[in-house]
Structures are given as C-alpha cells and as structure tokens.
Image 1 (cartoon, rainbow, N blue to C red):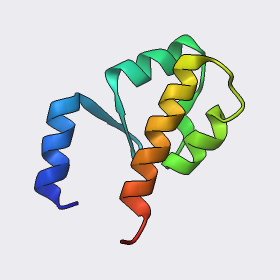
Image 2 (tube, rainbow, N blue to C red):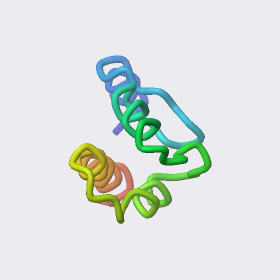
Image 3 (cartoon, rainbow, N blue to C red):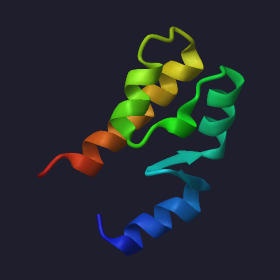
Length: 77
C-alpha cells in the first residue's frame, strides 16, 4: 500500500491516528464506552492482545477489523 492509497483510506473512513494505530471514530467510541485503554497501545498487536478476552459483539467486530488490517499491513505478499 503506497502513501496515496493510505491517505485515501484515511479520508474515506474518518480514521484518526493514535500513537501508531489508525482507528475509526466508531471504533474509538466503542473502545471508550467499554473502558478499554487503547491510548497506551503502540501497535495493532498490543491492541489486539488488550481486547482479545472481551466477549462483547462490538469489541469482537473491532478485533476482526484490526486483525484484517494487521494482516494486510504487515504480511509480505
């Protein structure tokens, strides 16, 4: 993914950068509502570890989205 594609994705999905993690406003709101301290996470793997034990459907959806993003961002193809 080049920088232009990343910028377009950010603009399309209203992503905010928190440390080294891009999250949508909806994801941030959901994490805050569940009192998950994502602001201290430095990467996607830390955030996934933090939310992994949560059984809430909204949190599981976020974990799925983050897992997919993590795969496409860090897996060499």
